[in-house]
Each structure stands twice: as structure tokens, then as C-alpha cells.
Length: 228
Length: 384
Image (cartoon, rainbow over all chains, first blue to last red; front, side, top):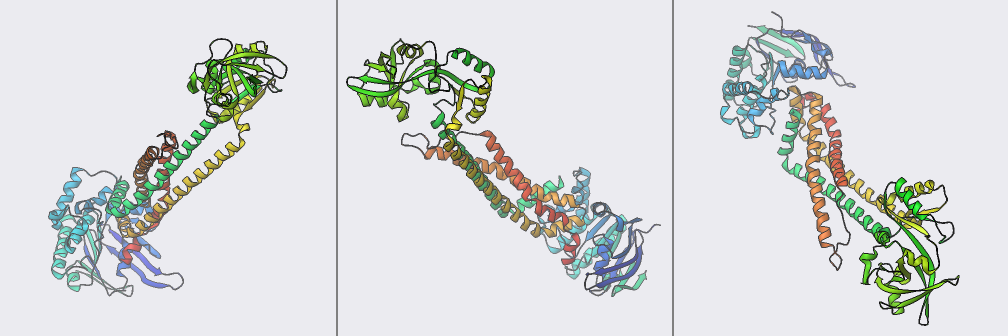
């Protein structure tokens, strides 16, 4: 089967006068439907790598192929469309829009296609809210929810357009251990139910151990690549 | 649609900010509307009192009070060929003297076709005593002269001129022209009376014209001059009232300056509030871009905010401006209850003010919009 995501010879250098290289010649590819984790100490370059995978950042050198398309050569407009249709993001901070309700936040990825929200789309949003367990707060504004509820809303939002690839950067970094467990349980269920590919950054080894593949970065290089 | 909806949400969620900025636009535009209408009202009043009851274009002869014989033909040709004429009135003006008892006064004896002359000089409206001349030999006299000479209705006046011609007329009414010079010296009769007293044939000395648009008087004057190939001397009020004109122009310029600076202040206000708003919402914009909003949509969110603010602020501003104007005419009054400045509604100007509000607000949003368009989602994501 074709790889969902392939990175070829990725280098990332920050700064122009004083250059700091964060990623060194990385080569990685991911199977569709797999659940992957990236671990590593802070400063190891894992967030930079995830941002490059998600086309939010461009590599200094190298090729990022998402579903066979080289994203490095795409226009900003096309990248925005690709992110909207094929990628889902979950960050350490929920980044919900406080101006909108939970329901509307989940619908945002559809609304920004300017297509109008059909009954079917609404039903899907409600289904997602049920899956992540926030149906009780669907009409609350983003700031009127608990941290766990906010993060669950963000997950539902990431899933709204049925993306093939979901990128999560320490999605439970701000949650307590019980909530963390629940969220990972949830991500795993979604992975199994929708066959979406997950790439999750975490510093929690216990969580990493529960994923299909663990990649450890150290100083911008792949230190370990464990396939279960 | 998404950009518009988001713009609306952003405005609604920052209620305090939105209300402040709307108040800013509303006050600015209301001042603009009020000042504009006030100055226009002032100018209309000023023009009306100065030339509203006067000849605005005059066809005469080279020499003062020279005779025009084919005046009926001239009136006919002007009416046929020149657009924008409001009233046209032939007049025979004869400088003369009167003697009553032992007193002598120099006067301006003027014969009119009274119906047409009334359209310009409002004899009928200005008549304070007696009636308009109907028979030959009847005249009406300015109230200044009445008071100076102690005239009463039915008095007989002896008119004479340098050429030694003379004749008698009877006073049948008194008029108040509201202008002292005219009140002191004018004696008005119909044309046949004036022609007969000093043995004139069927001639006049001038054709006086009021035009539809007073500021076109010079153009219409030129047109008439051309029509008669320079055979007559055509004058207009503009060349005779240069000081008034430059006064009006000065007023115009200062009014426009005030309006321009008010609008600039409004634009700067909106631009700075929206610029802050972009910074405040850079997190939201960044995340929207990460989720697939493109640069154009991100830009439009702020342009729409400018547009909405302009539309709402414009409506508020125009309403407020009209209210202030109305209150001004209601409370700033002369002792007789008439407004100090008669302000009339100028729909074109008000609509223009509204359009200015909308265009200014939208263009004020350009810089913040550009910043929003250029914002990279990674900046937000990396910095938390």
C-alpha cells in the first residue's frame, strides 16, 4: 500500500546570521491507518518535525510527500486546501475560537469551505461530539468548558472533515493523568474506527508504548524507530 | 460567507471595542454631515439674500440706460435659445428727480412689466400699503422715500430729468425691498407709464434675468452674449460680486477641510482599533489558517469588519448628524422664531457622506487585513 506520508532528506535550519540546525537529514514514511508516536526530549526537534509534516512549516531542504503529492512545491492556497481536507491537527493548547460555541468550533473546517452546513454535516458533528463525550456542552462557548472538554472539542474538530492524517502535538500536555488516559483511549478508538493515520508527539513513554510505532528523536536525528 | 460570519463574530465578541469604534465613526460622520449641511445652508441663505431678489444676468447697452428697441424680440430669442432661465423681465430705468412741495430728491424711476418684474423683485409680496399700479400714471414707492418725504397714498409726484422732460405720477402703494438703497430711491410703475412720462417710444433699457442655477449665471451670460453677437452688454452677478464669491469659496474650502480631517480622524481610529484586533486575534487567525483558511479569506475577515463598521457607523452617523441639524434649526432661532440658518436637506450630500463612511472604514481595514493575510500559522503554533 502507498505511504500516507513520506519525508525525504529533511533538514531544518533556523536563523540567517546565526544558524541553528534542528533537523538533520531525516527520512521517514508512515503507513496508512497506523498509530505512531514520536518521543524525545524537549529541543530534540519533534515539534518542528510535526509542523513540517503538517505543512505549517517548510523544511530548509528535503521533500514532504502527503498522499503522493510533494507539498514543498505547492502554493500557499493549495496547502491551505490540503490541510483543510486531508489533515487534522490537535495541539497541546486546544486553540478553540472563543467567539464560537463547541458545535460551531467543530463545524469550522466545513464552514470555511463556504459550502453551507447541511443536515448531514450537522449529524456528523453531533456524532463526533458523542464519540468524544461533549454532547452536553455543545452550545457552550469555548471558554465555558473544562480543559478536558476543550481538548475533546479540538479532537472532534480535527476529525470533522474525515482527514486521512491526524497530527497531534502533546494533545494531553495540559491534562491530568486520568484525562490523559481517556483521551488516548479515544484517539485509539478513532484510529480503529475510521482507519485514520495518527502521528502523536508525547513525552510520556507509557503512552508511546501503547502505539504501533515509536520514533525517538535525539538532537534532530532518529535515535530509535521501533515497530511493534 | 465564512469570512463574513467570522468578522461578525469577532465584532460581536469584542462588544466594548466595537461600540467604541462605532461611536467614533458615528460622531465623526455626524459632524461631517452637520458641518456640510450647515455651510450649505449658510451659503444658500447668503446667496438668496444677496441675489435672490435681484437681476442675476442683465442685458443692457454700451451706454448707461441706453435704449433697446427690439426688446420683445430679444426676450423671445433668449427664451427660445437659452436653457436654464428662470425669470426674464424687461425694464425701463430712468434716472430722474422728483419734486414735492419744495423738496427735491434724486430717484431711479423704473418701469416694469409688473407681472414679470414681480417674479424677480417680489413687488406683490413686498407691498406694505396700498396696491400695485394698474392704471397709467400710477406708481409705487419705496418705504425709505415715503418716510423721508412724508408721502401718503394718493400723493402726486412731479418727475423730471436732465433733459428737461417732466411728468406727474400718483402714489398708489409703498413697498419694502428690505434693502435701504432701493427703499430710498426706487419709484416703480408699469412700462407704458415710464415710457410716457419721459416721452420714450416702446423701448426698455435692460432685460433682467434670473437663472435656475445661480452659479451658472456667467455661463448663461456668455451664451446670451454669443447669441446677439456682442451687440449688447451682458453682465452677471458673479462679476459684480467678486468679494461674495471669494467669501463663499473660502467657506467651501474650510468646510471641505473640516470634513476631510474628520474623515481622516475616523479612518485612523478604525485602522488602529482593527490593528490591535488583529494582534489580539492572531492566535485565532493562525489556527484558522492551520485548519485551511487561505490568506484571502483571512484578509477578508478584517475587510468585512471594516465594511460592517462602516455600514453601521454610517447609518448611526447620518442619523445623528441629521438629528443634530434638525435640533439646530429648532433651537438656534432668530427672535421671530425663524432658524438662524435655514438648512435644507441635501440627499445627495447625505448619501455621499454615508458612502464616504463605508469606503473610509473599509479602506481603514486594509492594513490590518494585510497583516492578517500575511500571518503565518506556524508563528502562533510555535509560540503557543
